[in-house]
Image 1 (cartoon, rainbow, N blue to C red):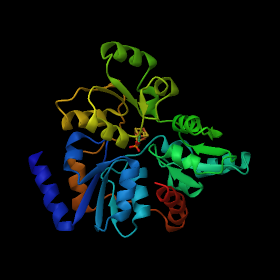
Image 2: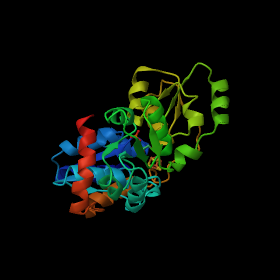
Image 3: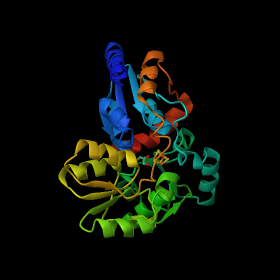
Length: 300
Ligand code: 13P
Ligand code: SF4
C-alpha cells in the first residue's frame, strides 16, 4: 500500500494533477485526496481548479459535473463503471414526458442524475441546497423533482411548496435502514444525536434529530460528540478515523454503496498512469446541462 501511495504522489506531482474524493470513499482514498467533500463542495471546487488533470474519486455523475464545469481540465474517473443507480432511474425522454404531463411546472433535478436529465431541467440541486433552490422558484409554481422521491418530498415539506416527485431512490439509503434500526440504536445510545441524509426514507428522516448532506454531517461532528449516522457507511468510517476519541456509530452497517466502494488505490494509480477514464460530455448536452448547474451555483 505504501509503495502504491508513493507512486501516486510522485505521478500526481509530476503531472500537476489533483485528487478529489467524495465523503463516502474508503478511508485510504480520502486520506490520499487533496480535497474531500459532498457533491456541492466538490462541484464548486472543480469549477475553480486550473490543474490539467483532476482525478475524481466518486461516481460518474460527480465526474461529469466536474467535466462540465471545468472543460479545460481532463477529468478522470478511476473506475469506469462507478455509477449511481438512482441517476439512471430517469432518462431524458422520461423527463420530457413528465414535463408534458405538468405544463408550466419548474423542473428541479438532483445532481445525482444523467447529463441528459440535467439538460432538460430548469435548475439543479444537491442535498445541501435543495430547500433553498425550491424556495428560489415562484411561490405558486409547481415543482417537478427528479429523480429522488425521498429528497424531493422532504425538501417539499421543508419549503412548504407543491413538489411532485419522480419515483426514484437511492437503494443504499432506501433499503439500508429500517425503523427498527432506529428503535434499537436509540435504546442502545439514548443520549446520541441521530443525523440522517435526506435520501433516507421518510420513516427514518421523520425520526432523525437533524437532516443534512454529507458535508453537513462532517461539519456537525467537528463540533459535537455522540452521533448516530444514517448515511453510507464510508462517511462514518472516515469520521471514526478522523476523531478516534469521539463516539460515532452507523445507524446500520448495511448502508453500503457498492459503487462508492469500487475505487481502490490501484485504480487511482492506473488512472494517473494511463490518464483513464477520461470523462467527456458531448458539447451540445454539456452547454444545456451547465445552465441548470450554473443556476444552482449562483444561489449557493
Ligand atoms: P451529498 O451531496 O450529501 O454528499 O450526497 C451525495 C450522495 O450521493 C448521497 O448518496
Ligand atoms: Fe448513488 Fe446512493 Fe451511491 Fe449516493 S449512495 S452514489 S445516491 S447509489
